[in-house]
Each structure stands twice: as C-alpha cells, then as structure tokens.
Length: 314
Image 1 (cartoon, rainbow, N blue to C red):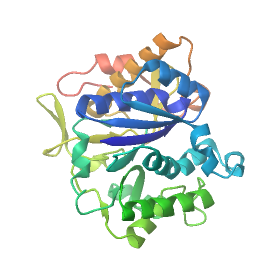
Image 2: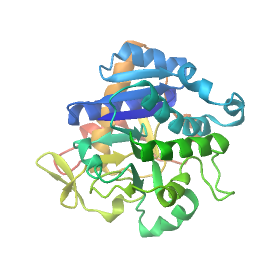
Image 3: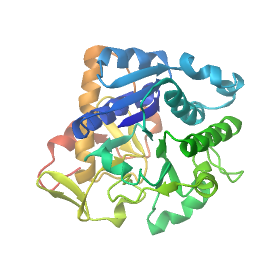
Image 4: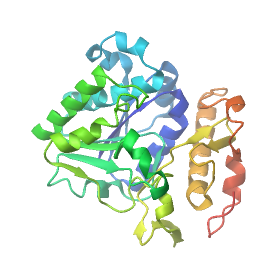
C-alpha cells in the first residue's frame, strides 16, 4: 500500500507513531512524507524509517503560486498542499495503483488493506464523519466527509478528480466556514457529486474518532481492540496535543478514554524517546502549556502504566 502525509515539526512525534503502526500492521508499504520545515526533514532523515520517502517543499512548490505561503496560515498551507502532494507522487513515482492520504494523528490497529476493499469499483474513496447525533449539525459547516483520510486510484477518473481538488485548494483553502466552504475538506462533498466512481468507505472500524466513537461498544478481545464485533482498523486521535514531552491534553471533548488512548500514549511516548535519542533538546510540542489551561492534563507515563486488561484508568 502507498500512503502520504504533510507534516510539520508540531506533528512529527505523531507522524512517526503513525508510521510505526503501519509497519506493524501492513507487510508491504511506502509512506511519502512532505516535510514542511527543515527540522522535520532533518529528524526524519536521521530516524531512518526504511519505508518512508521524504519530499521537501522545494520539490513541489514550483507547482504553487508563491503568494499562497504568505497569505495562508501554516495549517491552511498544509491543507492546500495535500492534493499537490498526491499529484506529485503520482507523477514522479511508478507503479502506484492507489494512494491514500492520512492525517498524522491517526493510528492503525489492524491491516490497512481493508480500506481498499471497494477498489475494483471505485476511483476515489472518502471517509464520512458519521458523527454522533449530538454533534451531527457540525457537519453542515465542516462537511460530510473527513479530509484526514482520502484515497485516489491511479486512473483517468481518479486523477481527474484529484486535479479538480488541487485546483480548488490552490484557489481557496482557509480555516473558516463563513463562505460555505471549509479548508480542503468541504470540497469532498462536491467531489462526491461531480465525479463518478467516488465511494464512501463502508468498512467497519475505519476512521473511528472522538466525534463518532460514542456510537460504538469498544472492547478488548484477546489483546485486540474491537468496535462492536469488528476489529478496530484505524483511529483518528483528533484533538490530541502534546504540551511537553511527558504530558498531553485532549482538546476534542477534554476527556481520556483509557481503552482507546492508552495504546496511543505509549506509541507517542516511544516516538518522543526516539527523537530525544536522535536530537536531545528537540521540541515538537504542539501547544504551549499556558494555552492548555482549560484542558485537563494527562501524563503519558501514568496513563500507560495504569493500563490493565480492561483498558486501565486515566
């Protein structure tokens, strides 16, 4: 399988955790990583991730108007470059049948190959938010589909769709819903309507997230996580933020669910230790402690050591 990601230093720890989860669940894979800054590129190069292919801004920015970088925030610019990266990979690397974009705050628990179960009949695969009823109304503003997981087939239809998405994001991609759009994400609703062979991902256990996990019974069977009766494949840890190398907050819901969060806490802590061994003093934390005051703080070490077969306690 082929994956790609746009990452800056504030998501570096999580990107390495994501990479390790793919390595542990997928026998044959490549991850194309667009490094948004020199720190990210330097650390990833030294980390020697065997199946990661590093791409720099210099490699792709000739396809982007120079004015965009100065007129969009870091997040907006990352969103803008997502379809640019996908297009670049298709153009410069051979024998890629499907290419899947993943947000860095995702983590695989089972084989990712199941995501492509509809690959014979589809050219684009989109992941629905499938939000809990209490927050379903938010989808009207941010969109039915989540841009953190999207797959394109290396076909005429798939690349036509990708080209259209790229064109729209270069034209407009901002963190606001005032205009009826939202970043790179709400364009996915247009894609679903405009382009044939665009399919929702219907595989159970994919892109489970804080906005929908209350709909499911999450349980541990023989050491593996299940969503109802299906294996958990991919969890999206939206809202997870490191405030230092030992502590984090959950900005989406401000709560810790031990059975889901304990394994991820250990995975992130392991990557923090890895990066520390490569470059002591490196700081890739996302949010300043002074700005995290309204959120409950959790210790990576305490959460993990408290885990038991039932999922432990935060």
